[in-house]
Structure formats: structure tokens, C-alpha cells
Image (cartoon, rainbow, N blue to C red; front, side):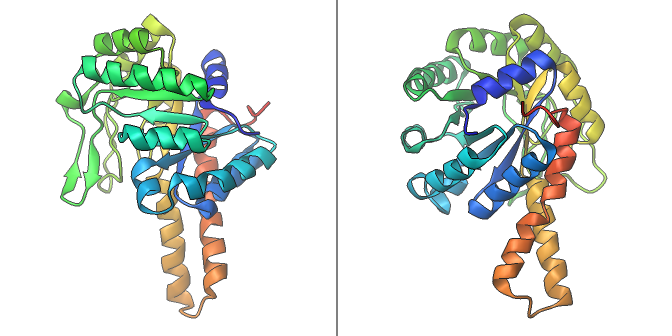
Length: 286
């Protein structure tokens, strides 16, 4: 069933669980996300990072085949543009059939972020699509090394509350301790759950955790209890596939390439299923 995030996040919000949003970048990885959700009877969101879409397979090529897979699935599936910072391209994605978009104008000040986001909300309504936004700035892992979240990156709850009220968004990503990418070995981030709790108490809005990979099962469970309704995971899904390929080729350098590609995305399914269990969304497809 192909849906926007709006309905599935409203249900998650009402019933106190989170929907997993898993980063994919091609048909195979998207298929793995849907397969895992079907095995867990869970709603699922396929996050397509805008930078990946623009670099690998653009929205006019990638969207319709994934939509077809979603339509044929017995569980609710949304396609969400992740970190849509190029608004012109975001508009193209809506036109091509994305059921949800994240308008990421978090690099701007709060007023400009709200202005840009509100314009996207108004546009998305034409397509019956949902809109996620972000207040605060997530840390990230990049080519320059590890950059972890610090105090200046945390979401100001008062700013977030005002932002939700001004923009009419369907979900808000908040920064309260997580970071994008992989963490150093043995590192478990400290989450400031009071940020989530204050925003939730004031607005009742669906809230989003970005950078779920490696954040720790306890942190994720407590995030759901605090009011998180969407959890983004990408790195762990891709690491599972990469490690399978490395191990398979080490054991058999002549591994048939089409079979290797098929087997690699299936190797990530258990990772997704683990996160679905933690999020509380298993069995929530109906």
C-alpha cells in the first residue's frame, strides 16, 4: 500500500510507537526495506537522500518502480525525500510521485527556515503529500573525520514549538544527541530526552530521530517513550550489505556478480527487522 507519512505517523503518534525510515538508494535496497517490513507486518518509510537521488538515479527514473513495489505490498509504504535542501529538486520529486518530502532548511535562521518550509507545505498539499522539516543541526560523519553533536547543535524546544505552529508540518526532526553516519567503536551518544518531551507536551506533533544507526537500543526505546514517531536508519543497513560483500568475496572471489548483488541486499534485512522491533512498529501494519 503506497501512502504518505501523514497517516502512518498519526497512527504511530496516537498509539505510542515509531515508524522506521530506512535509507535506500536504488531498487534493490528499496526492495530490501519493503521485504523486511512485510516480514514484520510493519509500516515502513523508504528514505531517499536527495544527494543520492541527484547523484545516482534521479527522481524521474527511480520513483515509479519503487512506487509500484509499494503499491503491490500488503503493508503501508511511504517514499520520503530525505534532507531535501535543493527546493527546486524537491518540487520535481513531488511531481514525480514522492508521497513525502523533508524540507531541510535548517541551515537558515529560524524565520527563514519557517518561511521556506511553509511554502513547501502549501505545495505538498496539492499532491496530498506530507512534509517533514528540521530545527537544530545534526552532527555528521564526513570525509574530514568525526564531527559529533555539541551543545550548539541541539534543538531549542521553544523555537521548535513556534516553528511547528507556524508551518503546519506533519513531522519535525529534532537534534537531541544523535549524529549522522557511524560512531567511533564503543561510543554511545548521550541523548537529551527532555528536548523531545518538552516539544511533544506543547504540540503533540510527530517527532523524528535522525541518525539512529549505532545510537544504542536503550536510547531508541527511550526516544519512543519520550515522543519520537519516526526513526531514521541508513548507515547500519548499508554496513550490513558491505560486510556481506567483503566476506563473500574473501571466501569466493569468483562469486557470480548478479547473485552477489541479490544476496547483498537480503543480508541487510535482519538489521532492519531489529530496528522495527525496537521501534514498536512490528505488527502495526493494520
